[in-house]
Structures are given as C-alpha cells and as structure tokens.
Length: 391
Image 1 (spheres, rainbow, N blue to C red):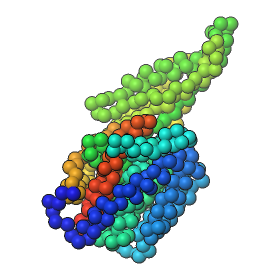
Image 2 (cartoon, one colour):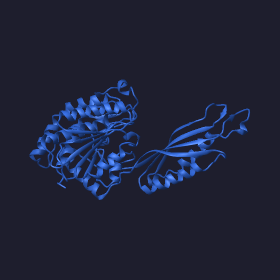
Image 3 (cartoon, rainbow, N blue to C red):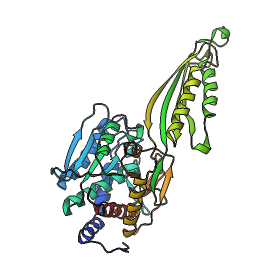
Image 4 (cartoon, rainbow, N blue to C red):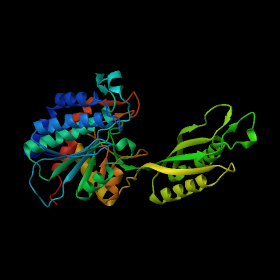
C-alpha cells in the first residue's frame, strides 16, 4: 500500500486486518459462486444469502431478513443494536445472477493466472464478499460513522421486489457505495443510463397460407413493421438506444401467424428522454401497419439513471483520495449498463457505483475477477468510510 497520507491507528489496524483476509475472502467467494442463484431461483438465491448470514454471525454482526414469496429475501446487516440519529453509510449489493440452474456445476469457481472464474464471480458476488469483510472489520475495530449493509436478490431483472427496500434504505443513508464490479480499467462508475424493459404482444388472425391466405392477418408482418419503427427511435447523440432483443411468433410455416411478441430494451441518460421514447413506442404499438392486428405493451422492469450531482461528485473525490492511500489510481467512468445505484441516486442519496473488486465480461461464460483487487478495493472502501465526518 502506498501511504501519501499517514494512516491513523484505527485505519492502520483495519487496512492491515483486511490485508490478511485475502485467503478467507477467496474461500467465501468460492462458496457463494458455487451456488446457483439465477434471479428466479429463490431457493438458490436464499442459499447464497444463508452462506453470508453464517459469515456475519461468525463475526458478531446482526442480520435481519425481509422475506419475499417469489424472489430471494433481502438481507439487512448492522454492526450492533445501538440507536443513533446519525445517518449510516449503506454498502449495497445483489446476489442474484443471470445464469440458469446447473451453471455452477458446469463451470465451478477456479483461479487461473491471477483471475477467478465462475458464474457471478465479479457480478457481483466478489463485491458482496468485499462488503462483508469491510463490515466485519468495522465490527472488530469500531466504526467512526454508522455503517450498514443490504444484500438484495433480484437486480438482474430490474429489482421488482427489492426496489422499495433499496429506496427506503437510501432515504435514511448519508451515502451509498454500490459494490458492482470495478471497471476493467480499475475505475468506478459515477454515471449510468436508465433502462426500461418492455414486452409487446401482437394478435392477428390465423389462416392456411396456401388454401385461404387472404383470410389471414399476419402478426409477424405487423411485428416486422413495428420493430423497424422502434429501432428508428434510437438517438445515439442523446445516448438513447432501442434494441428489440427477443422475438417470438407464429405456429407453423404454412399458417399465417396469429400471434407474435417482442421484448424491447430502452436505454437513456436524461429522464425526459424516457418520456419521449416510451410515448413514441406506445404510439407505434397503437398503430396497425397491417390492418386488423391489435397490440399491447407492458413494462417488465425498469432502472433509473445514475446522474452525477454536486454531492455525488464530492463523494467520488473523497473515495478517490482514500483509494490513492490504498495504492489505487481511480477515475470515474460512465456506463451504459444499469444498476440499483440509479434508485439510490433518484431518492437524493449521494451514490457511487462499481466500487467492488475489478472484473469484466459479466453475463458471459468468460466473466472474470482480478483476484489481487479484492484487498485494495476493500481497503479503499474502509478508508473512505473512516474519513467521513460525523453527520
């Protein structure tokens, strides 16, 4: 660690303790990566949660579950039961992945050439491991400001269950550090796009494509017109993109398609762009390009953008200085990806994202984590929290 600034006794104790935890961090990471936890796999997501609860219990931290019938339970973590009027720092992270059941068995956790691999290894099980050890360090050596943790269960599908829980926690917090993976550059994320995920369903009328073609009304024909119109709404200069990522339709090659559907991904930077794009999509859905077809639109999930504010920029500069003392050179980056940090920023809580260990290729079998970033990123987070003035 480079120390341009002398560390206080508590800072030295905590950074030294974290430096000695690398093997323990890897052991916990191996355990949680080797448990499947796709967003819709409640049993798997909760099994990962139980492994973290065991860790917290071993370190004397207090956990509380907020149950959910369909998705994994949310887990709140506190250092102790003391009541305080001081606003806490919230360490945030999700334990669900995009991978289906059986993936952990197909490609279990492994380390090769300084990189760890496995489903969700950097997005974002390593970030949760890092948060867990930082919380354990503060429990052991004391925290100058209150610190709490929240482990959510459904971020990869837009946080349908956990969004209100995240917003409630952020409203009561002084700052949010979201431990999504650090960028491959080593940078953190200070801005993100918002995203809206939609499904459009189209009804036509079936007919034999040879015998009575003229009686049919093609839902696929209608879908084709609508896709072209939706893709035209993309405005790269404004950072607004439309992508139809899934299409389904028809029943047989010799039948005029009676139904079709498409899933649409909208990304935007400024909230007025969301309003404009969604209104334009609704108009396209309401227009029948093939007479006789009908269509409807539903929003499946949504993320809000993370747009910098003077307070979040101040928080980033504070984190950047702490990271420097942990031997890291960190800049802020903009990302087109979405995350729960948009929800915390939208309720007015200063937020920085991707402060987790460094990794890349998320959502692919090549997803990796730079193992040597576990300790310094944990030290950077701990130093940043210790240097916050009481509020």
